[in-house]
Length: 178
Image 1 (cartoon, rainbow, N blue to C red):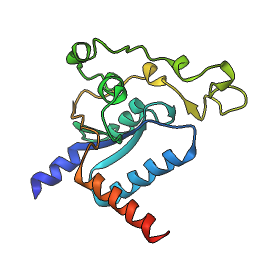
Image 2: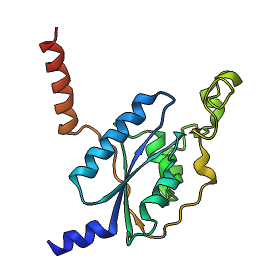
Image 3: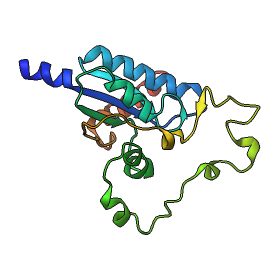
């Protein structure tokens, strides 16, 4: 039991979400984060890949600041692997991704802000939308992670039986409500 207390004191968990201009995704990840905090003694923060604050580096810095945390477990709250979970998030976390280049040689890895917007007025920092103060995008490239401990990056959810249970519950709920 003492070992578990030490592990929890020295380990932090960072839930990682993509980020969205819509409020529901951040409300959902914040609710999941709050639910997890109530179920664990680990210190927990949420970090967003893009668009929303708090970005991944800032959230990781908040997680470890003023603590004895020497291990951080980032959990990508994504269903499956994709470019963000295999390339972007490891890059943001400064993880050694030596196999990335070999595994993705045939994939166009170019990803920049213009990939998401046809015209400048679609840019989420334009005058019609929110400002840089409340919404951010790829600003993690400019943020330093002030942590030199161990990072244990987990897999996304994947084809897990718990995800299957959610699907079954949604189908049963839809049938019950028809």
